[in-house]
Image 1 (cartoon, one colour):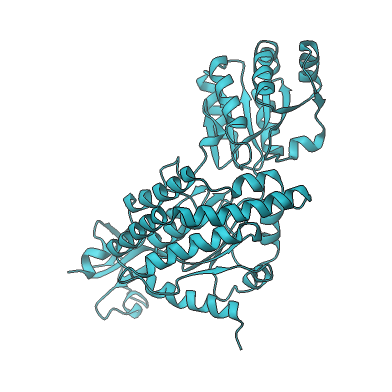
Image 2: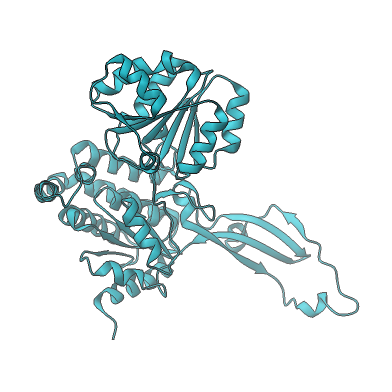
Length: 449
């Protein structure tokens, strides 16, 4: 006898088969209905979020919830605008499913098509951040994937109201199957979801390092994500210092509670005395707590900086998600690259330099999913990368990497169109040779004739 959770997942799995065949215009109609529904129900969303925030503040006081999670939980009118804008951006994007990737003639009249197709049923498990629901639902819908959501208890009311508003809107659109999107709400359901590898094709966790690692360690389902967001900026000897001040400030201060915020600033020792005083001043004015290695500590001490502290080995391995930054002096770009590849999480790392040779060296040798040159690490984001939104950021090296949009929600299948062909013709003592000639034809054109 299937449990209630398994019944929901099975329903979504069955609906995923139908959803995979829904045409683009129908999906876009549903997306527009979702955007309008969010706009029409702002007050309900804000009221539900207010209840979550009150409970979250109590939990923070008791030490059960971090300030970073409280910050991510908050929904405002501008955030709702962002949700709506994200959905409408997805409408503008090309449907990634059903595209002919490659066509190969095996022989005259025997054509092989490699065609993009939805993955199937996606499981999304996330902490805080109610805006994950419209982001992921819109991308999954457009790419033809059914989705099971499991949010954190701290966002229970917000997730529920946003999910219900969106599902009611999309399921009221003719042609969209019911049950393709499901919401789980109890803590116990997490372990149940992790065990349903028979039905769920891909898991996307969104949350803290420990949370993502727990998901990765407790399921047989493929996981798309990253456990850490330890990002660096390296200021080179050939840096334009005005650019460096702006990029280093933005990378840490613009929004520190996210995975693409800088956690360690590396500075070439030759320019440290010219660069650090002004940079320290800007950070201190913004309320950033600074932790220095020996060389940078000496400079900060001479400046008379308040509340300075020395960094430890653990600081180089820490994702603060807060107004905290570790600073280290290095002797060369090679040392900076070595430090980043040793302590970083292969997420996002940046160099500030005007030297083309060093720029090329940094791009080639930094093993991260996003590499920035004279630009903030905060640009590593699906919306900013033109993906409409993102389902997550992956540091994996298979299937999808970096900010993942709809391209990470499709796989492919092969379709062979023949005319009674048999392998025996191409085997034996006098086999007919394959032509293996690339063609320009698209499967959609052939089957729609």
